[in-house]
Amino acid sequence: MNLDTREPVTHTLGVLEAAALLRELTAGLIALTDFDEALLALVRVTRDAVAGVRWCGFTALRAGEPAGVAASDEGLAGLDDLRHGPDTPAMSAIHRREMILAADLTGEPRWPAWTAHARDLGVRGVISAPVDIDDHVIGAINLYAAAPDLLTPQHQLTAMLLAEHSGLLLAAVRDRNRQLTLAGERDTSLLNDGVVGQAVGVIMTQRGCPPAEALDVLRTAAASLDIPLREVAERLVRTVSRQRDN
Image 1 (cartoon, one colour):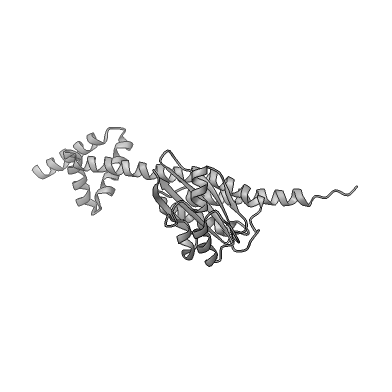
Image 2: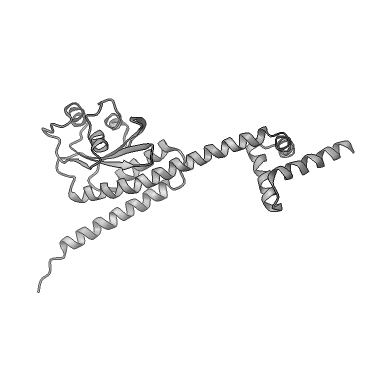
């Protein structure tokens, strides 16, 4: 009995390629804290990893206003911004909360101005998938093909998986950025504290290091001694004061 295994093999390869893409995206974005840098990494990895996709872009909105735009190639950067208003595949995907497909832009009636510009740049097909990032930021990832009918149902599945996974990764990037900002504010508050600021000044003088590094030295000492940071600072200042008095 002859069994045709070609379709399952093709499907399996598609799954493996999608898994490899998601793994590469995770590795590329897992430590980033800058949102724009993360968007750029996302679109470039996607462009290079997905067969049939020549370019990739991302459009992000915060409260209806631009929050970030990225393009894998500078020449197509204008396709993903808001200069075309609401009449773009990305904005359609965001507003309708569903994937948008235009496998062949020839005669595409939905976004006339955008389509004309895209065709001038060599784009012949597009998939835009909505991306939920967090409570404040949403977006769309845009996959572009250089020939009509290259974007298949497999590309739609990949776009769906990509949108879900990239939303989680980008949310984590924004969260890390918020944590860094809060940590910076706490550091500023500590440095403005009298005794902690004095201790930081002592360490800076002794080590010739910047304030942030001196504060880290105090934190390390506090953790090693298992006592509050302020107490470490007070001890250091008292010690230095006694030395000066003597």
